[in-house]
Length: 628
Image (tube, rainbow, N blue to C red; front, side, top):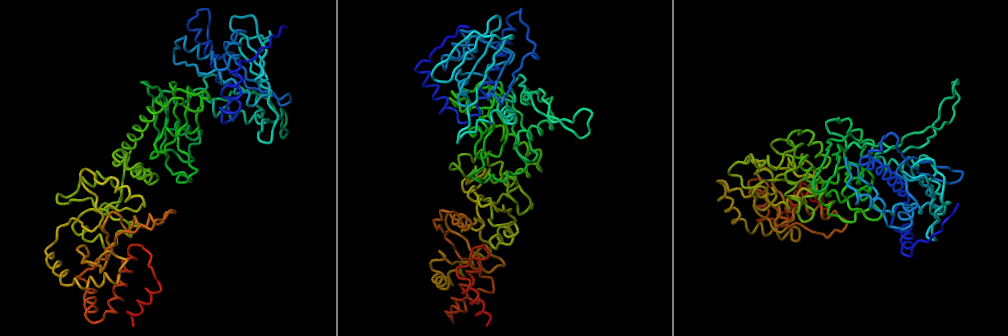
């Protein structure tokens, strides 16, 4: 047999070296590339059968086979595709980065949804990441001759006439020996090969077969077993997302969720998208029922699986989801993606951005539908992921607040359940100027806050904020349907003074010196001491002037980069409470007692707010002094 030895061109040598050492992040990708090439070869026969009446295409006759031989350290990927002539072997494999698949795709308009996967001839050379020698034996459709192409890497390749009975191609890899850093033996292991095929090539449209070892009871024996080899199809072939929605049940979607290990729960909602527009894509998305255990940790990775014509390109494509919808699981498959040389990342992201924009709209639409039509389900979702929506409102300087505000829910003082902002505003009395809210650790604690008394007495509804992000998010929204948000602890509640207003003003003027004295006693702790217009039964409370509330102070100071941010606190005194008479008497007769009472009231107000007392020992001693 006549063997021709040829050299790669200089630029091809450089590309090959780059292929082996730089382009691919994971060595296992080589199997995806070789299987994709094999699928392309079968697609070409299908296309020719459409245009050549002398050819018939029986899909059952076409398959891809993967076979490992541990003894001689070889891995063979064979197909029953169109095969290659000697010239095609040289053109497609001898010149790196020239793609036979791309040329075929460009020269021919494919039909019936068939699409050539291999956009770059370079994918074949990923085999050199795991193989010392790569051998290709091929017989082209309509040819009586077969040829063997073989290479040990950048030094060159040989082409030799060969014997092959059937049309198709065999790629035989002589797997490298293990090194300290790499375990190449895994690419000869049955379980590992199956794992890689299922991960990347599960939805290749032709059967991917392997001889699989299984353990069976020996014939005629009750307790003796033997290992037998049987041929199995490893891949699923027809992806669920390409099936008609009418043919699928919720159980089908749930099973896919489990098979892909998107979560250990059951999905709360499944979304099936098929788009045939400027960018064609299919997607199956899931809104999980339960929050993943690592969701709010740095280890959690957002993103959807990204497929190109059924071949997995990225396991977690973060660009497909905004952070505020990072809980969504699922996949996207498109034929229109512009892939880079390694098929691991996108060369141009225009198509991806368009897909991401559409997916974002669809997720929001489905959540709104859930809120409107399946309230109980939505509340279940919100209890798990509502916090993330609030982070979305707050992040990026409120850029997404308009998009997300109608999905938010808060506990209502009147309804005693979660309500939306729209529901709150719809039932506001005509004379109510603001959307009122109160902040605390739990709904029960907020219920008892002294600051809520006046608003509640007016019959106004109060939203309870118990998440540390709540107030930050609301500050970013600022107004909803032209209604401003107002904390029950803010300096001005916007509620007109009642008939006792004049009396309050008079009391404030009359006792100005008392309040100044108390302010001096609490110097550095409060900004002011004043008469309260909001307290009814409680003697004292803390309110704030300025943008930083007491709850915001707590959150900010609990962060690792604590900047010691303080709210401008105001101590409000209920002049209608018996305690006020004791304060006036102490101010007149006993300044030391006034200091004792003032500090006690201030510490009481701190406790009500859930703030730490600066000196607990002094506080307990002061209580004892009052009791003596």
